[in-house]
Length: 172
Image (cartoon, rainbow, N blue to C red; front, side, top):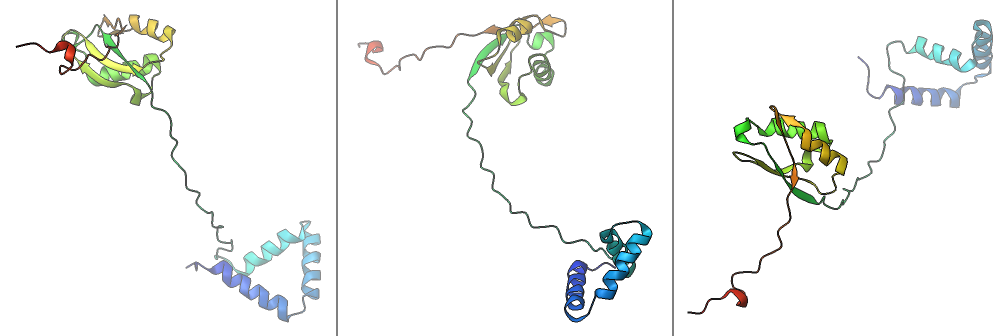
């Protein structure tokens, strides 16, 4: 069984040897062995270590890497535009099928297809406002279940005044 701290044990043993023993003869022996084997002295020392500690992992523990907290990016929200498609439940359009088709044909991110409402004869949905015109034109001719999407941009309604406004009060 390999000890978890085998590297620390080897380090402490080597410190004791270096501190209390004369190593001139051993250094010469390593140099002679390395020369005989035609390898560098470091490889020779590593081979000798593996002879002594066969089956023991002699690698240093991995250095501790400090975790750097990653701050979330505050990206501005994507402005969405409402669109109408000329396909709906009558044309057997299903949410997943439509979703996958729009991702494949327009390259829009999955999360940027929002508020999908499949009605009987048409579908309403929101896509990114800054969709390139060539993709928009391409989506007009894309078909699902044999029916063209014929996508149209819907006009944004201006806010209507509240009923409590003085302009719309009826006199009794």
